[in-house]
Image (tube, rainbow, N blue to C red):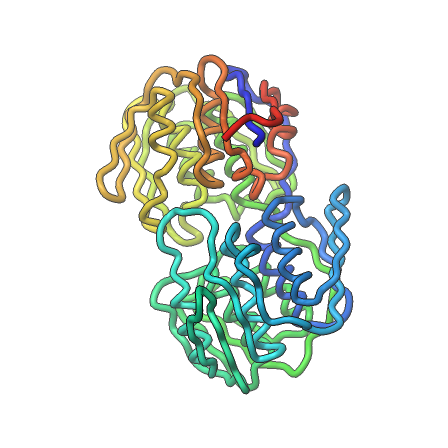
Length: 422
């Protein structure tokens, strides 16, 4: 397996373009199954998760052509030929469960293996299944597969017991072709959900309330394929801002939506960094005095849990005390042990992490445990003294397009080494 070799201490400087949002592109790709014909998606990032999802829709009967140089994806759907997504595809990516909504809407059945993906705590499927049942679906578990059957979906009101991005997306996709009115309460307000909703609306869906806790959907008989551009990735945007901050550099992200990274910008500003922004760009550079702050992860528009690990890596070298409270996923601290190997002073008390800033992190061999933990190790390595070897970088391949190339363009000394071991 490949690994990164990063010689730390290089000050990052310059501009870096932001790729399309993985967490918006994945459900949008699946939503293309809702209409026969050719859908054209622009600004689709070339990521491992995207390619896995393309295999998923292909096994259901779709055809695709992905121009990775132009980030243009063409998906052709003639009919849904299969209702089963095998474990071999689902085990590497939880988002495969998104196919349940479109499959139930189109053919009234779905057989999906219980999902895999990053082991970062509970991301319960029960909210998805309870919502499908509210729409008239019978759900059972058989030999590791979720089997859903619906002779005829019907509009209904459903309140999610907790905010769930995945369930919000899945139920929206099921409801757009469901007869009658569906009302979803306690919905996710993430930009990725709004982007999916806007895509469905362009296809002909009748949806109101996007970006609020209450989404109303009037079912329509048919949707049409369209051409659509995916929004930029706010998590990638925040990661590059944090990487620039960790090296005390001056970095500008371009092709971004500043509003989507507002919570990250606020936290960096509280740490003492100077943040500036324009219509589609944000820049970061160090202020005169850096200091600790408190960060609590929350659903959008709060601080995203997907940036908790990268900003923790930054916090390890900020003078004073930083406190990070994780409220979304209870076990999202797998990066802590690896950061400690690099000299970080971190204490965990339940869902609260206390970080005492050190003057310098030291290089060490470390290993990625999941996608965002991997980004944290990259941030730490960029700031550390010496050369850090990071293994299992396939995790970052799932969510960061051309990470090593983009960092190198900013001045980082980073190499991707083939066959780097476990």
